[in-house]
Structure formats: C-alpha cells, structure tokens
Image (cartoon, rainbow, N blue to C red; front, side, top):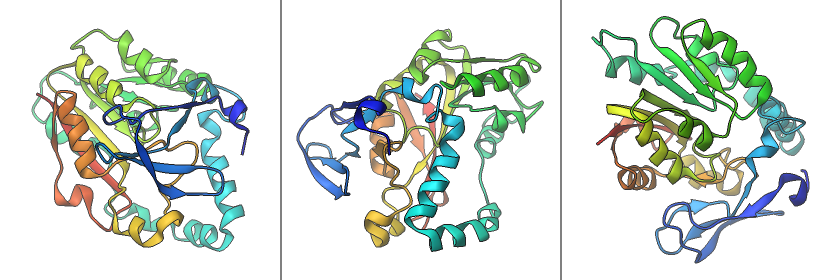
Length: 274
C-alpha cells in the first residue's frame, strides 16, 4: 500500500451532515472506518486526492488489477473460488439501462446520458442507439478511449474530476446521470448529487449503484466484508442514508425490495429530480 503522502490523503468531516464527532465502526491494521455520532453515516475519515487516480500506477485503469492482486495475497483460497465462480454474477444481473429504458420508454428524442466515472466507455457503448452518451473520467487514458467512442454517437467525454466535469455541462442539459459503482469512491458525495441535480432537466434521474452496508453479508463477515476497500471506498451507504442524502439534494428516491436485497452486497436506486 502506498504511503499517506503518496496517496495525498486528506482528513474529512462526515459527508452526510458535516459533523466531526465520530466513533470507530471498524478497525483495521492501518486504518479505521467511522460512524458519525450525529447522523449515523459510515465513512472513511480520510480521502485520496482525486489527482492520484489520473495517471501512473494508481490510475483507474489499473484499479482492477491492484484489487485482484491484493485479494489473492490476503485471501488466496477465497480469491481462487471467486474467480472460478464468476459466472454466478451473470444471473439476473442488472445494468443502469434496465432503469433508463423503462424511464424513457416512448420518448421521441434520444435521451442525453452522462456517465460519471465512465472509464473506457464500455457501458454506454453497449447501449448504442438508445442514448446520446456523455462521460466524465479523471483518467486521461480512459477518457481518451471513451471520447472516440462517444463522439461517433454525438456525445463527448470530459477528462476532469467528477465535480469539475458536471459543472462544465449546462444546467438542465442532461436527461440522466449514471453513478454506477462510483458514489462510494467520491469524497464529496452530497455536492456531487447536488451538481447532478443542476445538470438534469425536468424529471431527470440519477441511477445509483453502491455497496449495501446494511446487507446481511456485511453483518456476518464483519471486517472481512468485500465492500471494504481501502483507500478507494470512502462512503458506506445504507438505503436509509442514501435516501436521506437524496432528499437533501432535491431528489426523491425510488428503490424496490429487489433493488436492495438484504442478501446482496450491492444496492440500486433511482433518484428523480423533484
């Protein structure tokens, strides 16, 4: 693990309410995950400066390899079993487009979708013809690849941080924002949702996928839960805390029982601009 100086770690207050009073919720050998005593939000009290992920060994395009290597070293048996049974994740697998296609069914104009943390543009590329794709990614290499793909369909990709990228779009210019496996990484999740609200037109929506801190598996596994990833995951949402943050940034949250199964390590939600 790189040093604190290399990661450019900065201290942070509670992302939910801004409070600084907290207690340890989970203690590991080199860090702690804390719970805000005022609002109950669970978070990492430090965050990596986004510039660290722009290029080099810690760039987002290398994140998957780093995670895999870490898991193989820490828990080799579990890592091998997970790799051998990856087919299990294909059953009833959801994507953001399951929600977007239902929301925009019958719309005559192609919806304009911005994918925050779009990477190389894989997800919006797979929905060719259904949307006009836009993206934001801090990795220069990934943004360059996605930009070529999206330009062919009338879209664009901005090589900026998430907040800078959303600020660059005109207010009300987008129909939807995708936050798939992203909000748990964002050091400023509430401002990000507020900025998403700004770029959406009337009735616009945000599709969110995050680890489900309220899952039964987290309770059983304790510190061994797969949702704990230091220093990448800085926020740990429950359906209640995500709903509260959504309301406070101008959204109404829709989440079915199947979007937040107690047995699932992840949860989905649709936030509609109020």
